[in-house]
Image 1 (cartoon, one colour):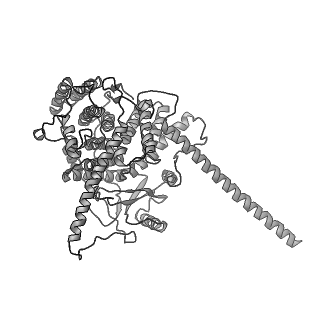
Image 2 (tube, rainbow, N blue to C red; image 1 turned 90 degrees about the vertical axis):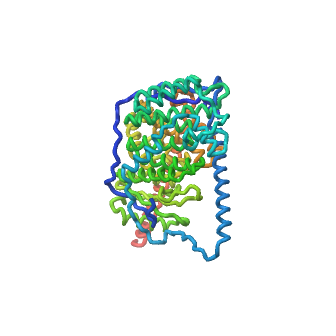
Image 3 (cartoon, rainbow, N blue to C red; image 1 turned 30 degrees about the vertical axis):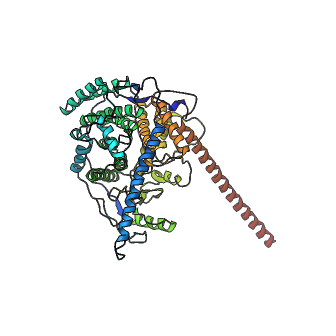
Length: 570
């Protein structure tokens, strides 16, 4: 990776914008159907963090760290599986076998159970607004849950009365401790605006090197943990003030700084809910539940609360969707073409108003909160089928299975400069038609790849369109969100060397964009988009050639028949 990816840790402090009330959940529209028999459940001032004069690079470290955590969970799972196998061999041979549900079985459709708003708010009170008073608890709990020295702060904050005195815990700078203590005191007194101001002051202290007691010996991960703690406190303050728009970038940055901590993802989900972005809230909740399990969370009631929240967000996303409806089909065997046609027939009967374009997602299987069990590999999986009222709203999905790098926006002149009107039209198409559908698909799909149609690359390309239209604040939010997703990817999947290098390049370019740095090289995601445009252009040439060839052949055949008839008549 080049020098662009070796960076000081960065975060930003937002200015205050007008108040925005938290919307209430509305569940009066159409409901999803489950094809199974189960009924469970503006870029502001940049603050650069440094560790003395050292430049830090944490992407590679995070990839290694995520790999070690996943290997530990894999070993634990293998031990449990071996124990279960031994116990089953000791039982009588006449025990009842679990049945595998095939797609040939009768499909039973049923509505998702309605989850009251009170239940959602209860989850937020118990898991989102919990008052973590001491940042050092993150280091402690990480050591407990992973057995690794505190470089992954991943599990929940514990009661200070039960925290042992670990001598290896990083010592927070004394002035920063005072600032955090004053801010937390104001927060507990419900003086949220004052608390937010003091947390911003703490963030500035952190940016000037006052993060840990021995800054020249501090690791990048320890500094990131402190900064993430402050960012997540700001998220809570702004949510309490009913200003989720101000909380959004802080939620994204808390994940960039500490992607393994499940509450960061859950707080991001809450911000999305308050902004009525329910598909994105559902994905954040799904990742929160997975992170809780991955980093050793054992309290089942916490996982159940997160799954309840995830399920509520999916329900609301389906309810609010106007252009499409959905159906999940229990997956048990390899899907053949005739099976897909059968699924489409069932969808047509169930959702007759959404049959102008029907798409079954074969790019990756889906997991539902009602049956999600990360400890059993793989968890119960489903096929997702989407149906659209308007063919134009969904036909872009047809490219997903037929293109290596699908480009969802049509370009009349693929390699020419776009007019402002074309840029506005492409931006609106991407933001209102394409990204919402991709976000919904990803709300139940765990794979965290940055392949085309995964949503990450499309968000970065969308940010380029916003930049061309000088919509700086929206561009900043989109890039911060994309960086949060990129930072999480190593925990969701194993990366090849090529994928790891691409991840580093994307993170470096995203950071350069946020900091306003320009260089002669084009952004990675724009290069990938041009490759996709070239591929699309070649497909168009091929289609045009085949159509012309077909017409020419038909014309020759027609002329041949005419000559034959003329000969016969003469």
